[in-house]
Image (tube, rainbow, N blue to C red; front, side, top):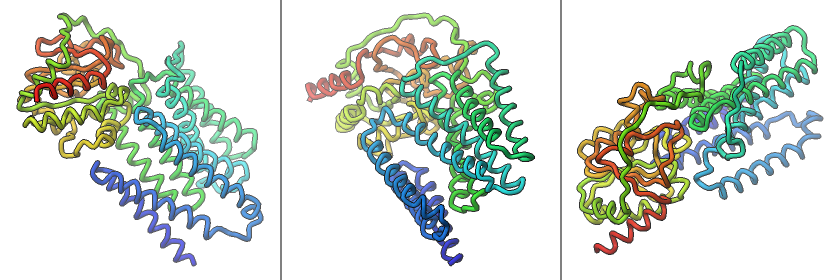
Length: 459
């Protein structure tokens, strides 16, 4: 029997790793999710099938377990079907928080019931409880910020010191639990951990939410891994380690893409920037959608840089329709994806895949950046800070040093945007004032409809 259990956990672990590997490519990502999901089904079924059925508590709680599984699956399926692509980041933040909360709940049961015996198990339970609680409450704040429920960052004098004191007090209470375990101290420990998650997240601006989501994803994985050791559950250990390590690597990549060090994210003015950045000279030059479309039709090469504005306008299908018309006219078209385009990693890739855009014309920033110099027309759809040349040239700019898409190096640039608003960083985009740049104002979907109509009239 033990061999069968361990073999089943090994199979679940293999499915997790195989699924994660396939998620590394847009071509195989969908099947990767299915394989990893199958691994989770195996892990859950094994845990239920080989539990001690003679345990009275198991018999008493069997109905609650089945009800929780049904409720969770039905709710997740319903939400996953109805959530719009623009709301995907906040859904990920919410689900990530639920994972951290589940790990913290397991730790709470172990600590309140004193099941965790010895310093090692108790220490792991406490570590998982702290990290899971921070991930849970912090992810809820991240969800509120992305959803627009919480629109302003909360900052006050001495905030960093206050946050440090809350964390220190929580850790001290946790250490005291190793010597003397009481329900009151366990409660205080969880209150402190949940409060720190809130305090850590409320001062962070919306522009930094992609890094926050990635960081809390790593926290959730670590918490699940720790609680897996406490429960001696191999599936939880492996899943937690995979999620934790993947989330950590993604956080480092995101930090690099946003020109932040991990130390800055964790200990410095996270989300606080001086948005002066100097004065931009020149004027913004408007252009008609039809004129832009005509110039692109007679171009040899066009590169499109999408941003979150594309998702807001839900214009991905119209954009691909326009692209297919350009390709039919013999124009070479590529998409250039910045690592933080949108509000989370991979957001633009999923958005374009949903519209049916072939993977072979979607390129990461480092693969396509050198091609802008030989591009006739670059088109920016709803992006701002990720195409701002100030990141390369203006040392006084708060985004200086951030890798950007070199759209300004194209012979002609058209920017589709609603108005003359600034990006998340709050600074003017120098690209909009350059001689080779013109702005096509309006909702992205409406502008693309006009562009499509202009090409049809030329046919």
